[in-house]
Structures are given as structure tokens and as C-alpha cells.
Image 1 (tube, rainbow, N blue to C red):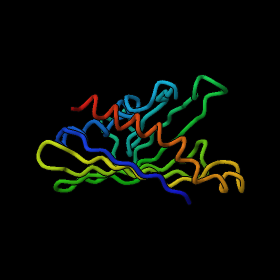
Image 2: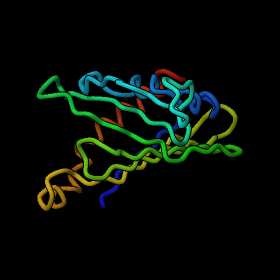
Image 3: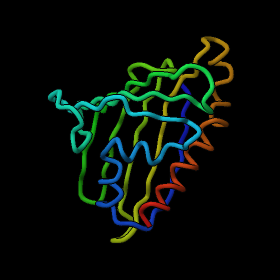
Image 4: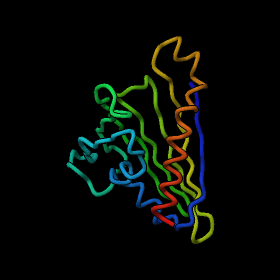
Length: 160
């Protein structure tokens, strides 16, 4: 399994950063326009449609069409863990259906004083394509870097 990690310091309190990342709206805001993301459905752990907060057991069904090319790609993510402790918070989503054979994204947030937060993303992934995908797996960061650079820049822009 390959891993990609990136972090950024955001000049905003942990509570604001955490709340922002708790909804599908946050996902849309942090996805570059060229990905053409569309949230098709959100369900809470009890099956509730469009929950106010995505907690453990929630499901997000989205679709993407990078650069508007080709058919839309369906992406189903399960929020498998979400916890908040004194000065730290995290959630983990796992792709159940989508373009990658394996995708686990852990989002970690740590207070850095009263008015700043360290946002850390860790993705464990496997590229599609079987043996060829595994051979070029480490090169996946070439695609991930612009995406996460955008996410972090946009987080700062929206919350600072």
C-alpha cells in the first residue's frame, strides 16, 4: 500500500476547522473546480438524509468528472471513525466504491495554541491497474500533491 501525507497550519481555532470539515459542504468547498464534484447523497448512521454532521457510520455518495472528460466516476465513502478529544480531533473515511481499489483518508486536526490548527491528511491508497498500478503507485503523489495543496490553500482562505 502506498501512502501520501501533507499538513498545513491554519490560523483558525480547532473548533472552527473541525466544524468546517464535518459536512459535505466542506468537501465540496475543498475540491478543485476541475474535479467537477457533485454530492449525490449523504446519509447519517441512522439512514437520515442530509445530516447536519457527518459522524461515524455516515455515508457520502459523490461523483467526479475530472476536467469534464469521460463519464462521471461514482465515489462512495464511509465515515468509519470520528472522534474529538481535548485539543485534537480526527475522522477517517474509506472508499467503498470508486476509482481506487483501496483508499483510506485520515484527517487529523490538532490545536496549535488557541487560534491555530494543524491540519494533517494521510491517505493510504492503491492505484487502479493491478500490477501496473502497483508499479507506479509511488508516482500517485504527482496527482495528489496539487489536489491537497489546493485543499490546504482553500482551507486557509476560507477560515483565516
